[in-house]
Length: 68
Image 1: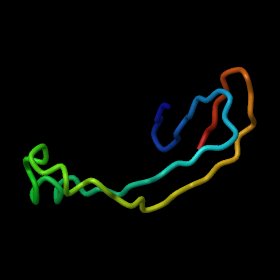
Image 2: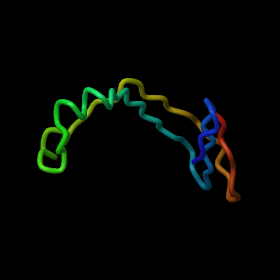
Image 3: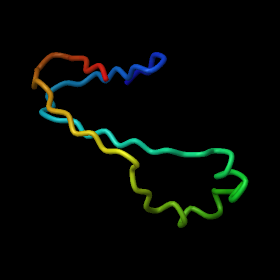
Image 4: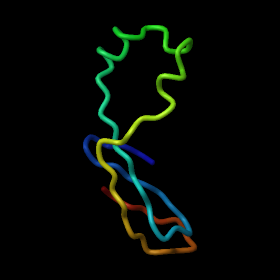
């Protein structure tokens, strides 16, 4: 996977579909509420994605690129 500005390139092989989950995170608030997150990992055991995108791919035996 590569990110170039606002384009995500995903390299895949032998896949029929792809699910991408997007998470909106405000790092400033996250750090100010819990600056030592290593001690409190249980709080983040489940996080729901803000957006999920399911993509059908062309199954190939060679390496392919999906541009999103």
